[in-house]
Image (cartoon, rainbow, N blue to C red):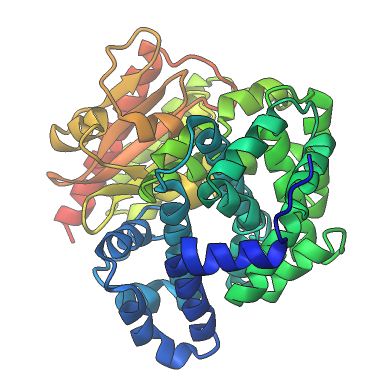
Length: 482
C-alpha cells in the first residue's frame, strides 16, 4: 500500500514542532551544554527546573542504587551533575524525558501502545547492554554510546507515539507480516521512507551526537562503540522474540562475548546482572509498564543455560578451622577486614556455598551495599549486588532491626522481600544475618547457592548463624578495646 505522505521532512517537522517540541528542545539544549561543561552545571538545572515531575524523576534515578554508590543523597540537579558528572546526568535527563514524552501520550490504540511499549523496552535494554559491554572504556564513551543505543529507534518510537490514524493503519498491515524483512518493506512502502531515515532526520534536527549517526549510517563499522551498539540491538531482538531458536541466541551471545574478549559463560553472567539492573532502573524511571516486555533472567537461562559448574562441597574440617581462627582473633584485637575475610572463607568453603558477602548500610540507611565478596562472580557481585530497603523488604528489615538471622529455603518460613528484591535474590534460597559492632547493626552477612541452584537447608542456616555470631563477637571485642 503506497501513501502520499511527503516523506522524512514532513515527519521530522511534525514530530519536532507539533508533537514533541519539549523533548526536541531539551535534547538540543543538553547537547549544546555538553560542549561547555564549565558553565553547563548551573544551566542544566535551570533548563528543566520548570518541569517538576521530570526533575523529581531525574533525582530519583540519580539517587538509585545503580548510580549512587554510597554517597549522600543529592537533592538538586546541579549537585547531582557535580557528584555524578555532567554526562551521566545529561543522559538521565534525556532518558527520563524520552520515556515520559513517548509513553504518556494517550491518543494511541491499545495495539499501537503495546507495539510502542515493546520497542521502548527493547531500546532501554539495548542501551543498558551497550553500556555494560563498554565497561572497560572511558565513562564519556559509555554515556555517549548509551544514548546512541537508546535513540537508535527514535524515529519509529516517535511515529507510533504521535502518528494517530496512520500508525493504526500501519500496525494492521504489520500484524500480518511473518518476519523482520517483510515488516521493514511494508513500513517503507507505506510511509515512503524507512524508520532508520526518520531517525536520521530527527538526529540532525535535534543535534544528536555523531555516534548515533555513525551507528545509523554505517552499522557494520568495526569500531568498538559502533559494533557494540549493533550487537546490543541484535541481542535485545533475539531475547525479546518468543519464537527465537536457542541456536540464534547462542550465536549472538558468542559475538558479544568475543567482542568483550570474555568466555561465553562469563559474558552470560554479566548479562544476567545487566538484565536485573535494567528492570530495577525502569522502575526508578517511573516506567514500570516496560517490565512486561523486558527479558527475564529465567527466560534467558532456559534458552541459553550456562554449563553446569562443579559445586563446592561442604567441609567440616575447614569450618572448624575458621571457627578456631575467629576464636583466636577475638583475643588479639583484629581489624575489621581480617575478621570478615575469615568468616566469609568459613562460609564459602566450610558450608559449600557458591558465594557470600558482607553488605554495609548506606549513610542514609536505605540500601545495603557490598563491602567484601567471595565466591562465584565475586567482582560482578561487588559491583551490582545492591539491596534496596524499601517498605516491602520485610525480611531484610527484620534482620537489621531485630538483629536476627533469617533464611529462605524449601523448609523455611519465608518473609516477604518485595518485587524489586525478588528479581535479585535466588529462588532456591539465601541466608542473611546481622553484622554488629557491639550492639549497633551496620550491615549483614549474606550467602547463597545461586550459581549451582542447590537448596539451602536448616543445617546450613544453623552453621551460617554460628559463624556470623562469632564474627560479631570478634568485632565487638576489637572495637570495645580500641
